[in-house]
Image (tube, rainbow over all chains, first blue to last red; front, side):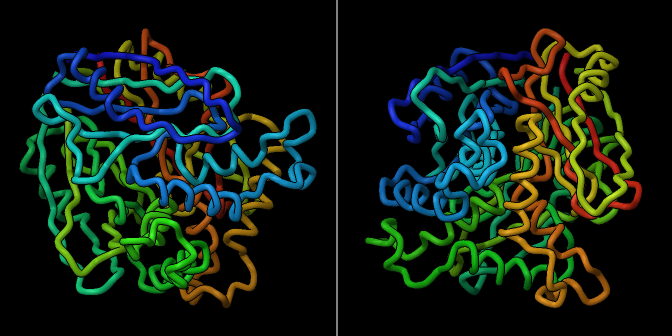
Length: 138
Length: 138
Length: 138
């Protein structure tokens, strides 16, 4: 069994933002030399998400509005976590979006359906944060 | 290390519908000959979900009503994604339900608790769509 | 390829409660002798969750209030599942929190970011229930 590890670093210049990381995950898979296996991609921070969906700007705007409805940022005082912090909403938004994805590796490629793309969703940005890629297989 | 790949195809004759795929995943596991490992099952489309819960019709009706409350289909005009499309709600509903499950394989079986069943949840049906099974192990 | 399996048992003395299981997962990893691979941790019950987030009591109180807003327990009669049962809300709350996590194993350690901790979230307690750890790798 082979394994391969890679970190991706981000510094999103707003509180929230989406980064399509599909090509970076594909590059890590190529580096790994793994042809058959599983590829885990996860946020290493608890106020960010890695998820799979469509690379369509209208949908991304819908995510923004929808997450703000389900887990509003303001008022900060509504959350017990916001004593020293101001990012309780980011923990909740990330819970809805998910921490990680696991993708099949087949024939040396990410085994995707027609529109699947991997995103890093920054929910509490303005600082350097990371996602982890771990691939195992043969 | 062995690996095994199988696609499951669906054509759900309504916009939304649940399909219990547990026995099909078990059949794929038997075909694989794998005794110890991990089994990934994921929707290959971004408006469908694979998830694990109870095979109980009351709960499934509750899911329908609840998802419609958290991410309503109508009016279509509330979503920026619905310019050329009409399925923004399906992307959001699938986000809540999740894209994938990872199940332990032990002694040649899906290593399940007493009530765990795997479902494909079609959220934008009336066409042919797929789920992927990928099993790795020995 | 090696694999290792372990069950964790819980009996949470209220309807809901959070248990930090990070050190128990680390202990299982040490027992396994696996240095590089993937570690799956999942609830074996469909009214409980395993998830990763911060070990901060304010945030945990926020989760409680937030889940109760998104999937309220009462009135029980609002859910079709609550004929013989009274735990429909627990199925929905667990859907938001997620069934499982997959964690990279690197150099014999859980490959975590700075604040990641693994929790078992009991959503329908007062009885003995289980989570499963399955580690594969080398």
